[in-house]
Image (tube, rainbow, N blue to C red):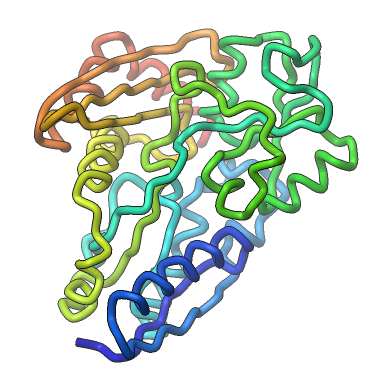
Length: 308
């Protein structure tokens, strides 16, 4: 088993926190293991002039980390699972999907305590089409404005008065000790999370059996099953993590209960489905089929036409 491991990570504060968290878990699990962080700036970090949905989606945050592993400059990469595209390239594996924290979306504002308290025409910063669609479905009177940059950059823009509020992930704010900035933890029924939201994933090359063995003690089978079901919805629909597509699974006894949602970007049409079963891929595929039966392909075709 290796005595040294290199973790590729984005250089943002949240990504570094995640990598350091996994490093600490590894060092606590394997006595004498030396862990090195390899901080990289990805295309997604550099390209801040347009919403991610217009420039290739969140996969822009992943590619350089995978190249580092292929070039043997890193052994693993740590990701927020919601940032990973639904289909992992065949040369990579996810030996760890674990450490899931609060999956909800957060309203952050200096003045307003809830979505209900936002005045008509309030400017809400979010580059997530998923969050945008679900918020507009509830409050079509609001103005959703794209915002890019890391968490602290977005908070500075809010504090400077560029927005009345932001929509962010609760888990990221909690991990950065910014929980006090959260004014409302939005109920899951009102803002269904992205697939994998709140969970961390460790990716490595599929041919690195030594690394896969090293990572095994960190795995969480329950979180992995739920996230696999969520990601299967996107895989079945041919979607990506920049679409207004949501999925959240939880365990009820031995069964996976999965809620899925697909909307148009205006929030005027919102499709919902629920599926239950024991095999993650089948549960996700069933939920996707239920969405298709309601007209999901019409929405997906319109979204893809906007991307070209």
